[in-house]
View 1 (cartoon, helix red, strand yellow):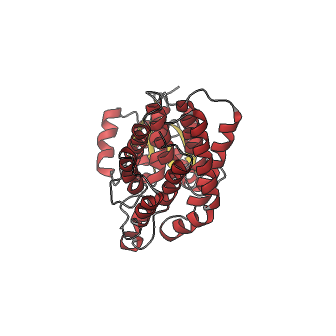
View 2 (cartoon, helix red, strand yellow; view 1 turned 90 degrees about the vertical axis):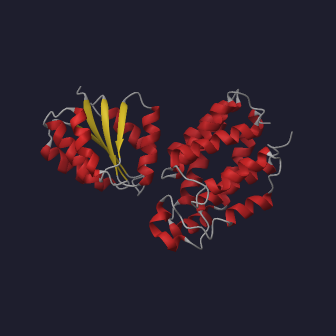
View 3 (tube, each protein chain N blue to C red; view 1 turned 180 degrees about the vertical axis):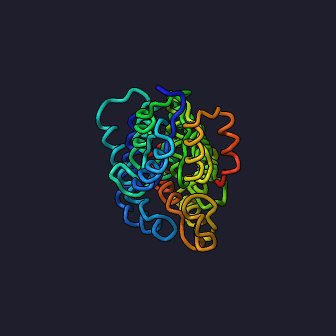
Length: 196
Length: 123
């Protein structure tokens, strides 16, 4: 179940992990994209941290929406609108009730798919979000499984985003968006968001 | 205040600057605004810059043209959150924008412009 405090702790831990992995994320993006995923994500999550500290929040919906707008406007590129859509989608669902984390995450996934039109196997963040939402539903999300889904993007051929222009040459590299999404789900586990 | 305006979005500031010059030559009376690059002038697209370009455009209803994928995603988000009607065209960037702008200048009806943009779709 999500509470205001828990949601903020989750998002701040995500931001901390992004900052720690900033160089690594950009290196991954260098291989198959434009090389700025780490810098962009770190800028976005830093802006998110700042707005979350600026005032007191009454609802989970409010936290998620504010976070989403910060990510949308500060990450830039394709990840800005994708993470923005995820969080704005989650915020809407949280307005219906913050107890059902799996419904909230499902709304986030819906936001991403609507924005990017990616499907399973396209070598995008959807390849982590899709199984993760399922696992949360069945109460079996774990660090090991997140790692597996992230690594599974390595042999895939990109069908969406800048990497898709590379065709076959996109094979053999992990998708940076899948890696950063993995950090988001890892942070969920570590902050106990999924505990009853 | 005119009915229609043209909105250009690119990953690079100089691309939309150059394209604006090209369009203004043929259509001096059409409202054209542009968003190019990231907030700090780098390569990429910025939600905030696009939103500003929408607000600054004198047109009530905008025809939007873009270069690559993330420009469109940011445009989509701005369109969803904006009060103006924004139609995004998946046409070849330069050809599409040029066709639309030249036809708006010639006061060709909107539905006719849509028809002429149709074969220019490449994305």
